Image 1 (cartoon, rainbow, N blue to C red):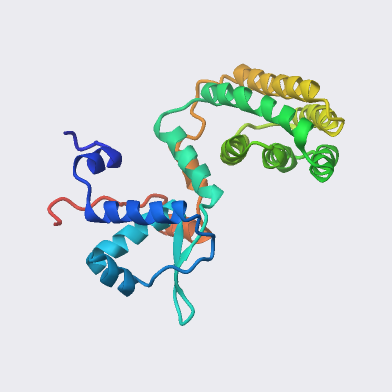
Image 2: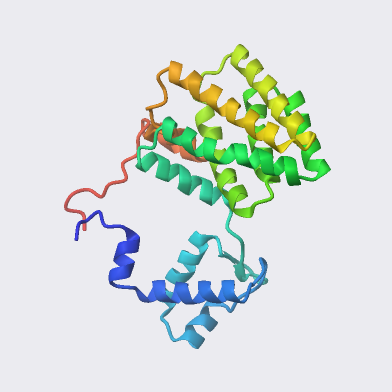
Length: 270
């Protein structure tokens, strides 16, 4: 088996005690529909009741924290608390997959054209009057890049299909990151604003077919713009783009290290 085998493959081959315990706890949280904020047994109680070592329990809880299903709160009123996955985790995972798989902007537009036009139609059919008003206000008043990206985010949030909403929410973050690199000028932004107003008006009027076609046309025009710039076969998020993702302290450490951090263990260091 190669050194590059996936974590999933390793777990299938030899399940660890921590993996099995995490599966057991995950199953209970989901099957019992434990709500966010529910306090679970303490770490010592889990050790004593389940018969696993403390190290195994901690590792299992770390796996659940990575899933976003629990978090640990320190202090007198703390403990292990049920939570809900942060949508940003899905966005980051999707973005990492795009980077590691060398996904291109052409690939991204295939996905966007399959999902966003239909989402616009669903929003036109089902969104509340308040949601429609927010989308129309955004399209009318926000003509910069931030506003244009936010417009697509509002449509994702208003979509009355939970799976499509989750996918579009994650996709929206990726679009936000790559749009900053596209060099759109004032004329491009003005044309985008015009199309966004057409989409928003169709949504506000409940015209699903019009909204769907307008969104598809909008994406096709943006795709053509990037095609003229020779961008479509370039990566959605090249590795270098991740230098712009992180905390201010992360970037300060990077500057202190001369722009690059060494994360490899020195040879011979066991």
